[in-house]
Length: 376
View (tube, one colour):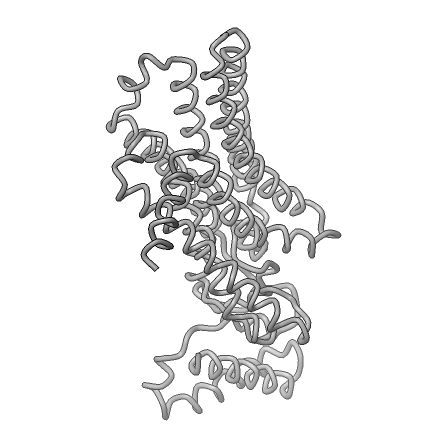
């Protein structure tokens, strides 16, 4: 952080010296750079520890300066709160983060350690809290860290920003694909119960999980790869955290047709595949329930499927809101709030909705609670 402050000071000094030689003067800029170089020659080792900083932010004019560096320091807008609400918002977000981490981790440990819960449905469900932990951890700690800083002091390196954006989109994509494979599990269990154990083997569970995560990694890698190939002439991330859209807006290049085309394809494929798969699955499940006279089967189907649909709708509505608000700059503040809520609401509600509504998990939690209370 100290090196970062030194970089900022150095760039501001460069800007002041440039202005003193005259705006737009080539001779003035050359003289300025020589003066800065002379000042830094005496401390070569210290200068080597500095992080490269985007000089262009301090210069006026549309062109990119020759001193612009690819791996630069970016400024993140972060979460805009008033000074009076800083501490209440920090405490609220911290409590939410702790709850999400504890509840999702507890579900994973519970399913992993209890033999009664070693079923394909529960193993597939473990992907969901694992993804929720990833999605929350990738943005909330940094937002909590920056909440006490001035907006002008919220910096992130370009590389760190790309990494954060990568895992943000992994979380978004995995949300859809994990719920798709969970819907497939419910389809086999209800529509083909006699062959459920033969189809949903441990090997199949691993294949389905690998499909969900592998497809997410593949699509997001291509998406971010197309974005980071672009040179950038801006420095400000106009979002509480880094994502692909924010990184894309840093570029001033005009040849971005392939980015726009793939971005549309990525969004359409992700949402279409998700919605159509879940819709067809539950239409077939509903058809079986309507034609079947087995009340026990219908009751089980309603309980498990209603829980899954509730989790899916929470994720779909939260995700769709901030994606579509990206197209409307007028509602930028609403979009920023919606983007944060997407990383908080589903991960916070999933353990409650899915964990407590699942009979086996609920009974195990009650049993553990009663045992703990009896020992005390």
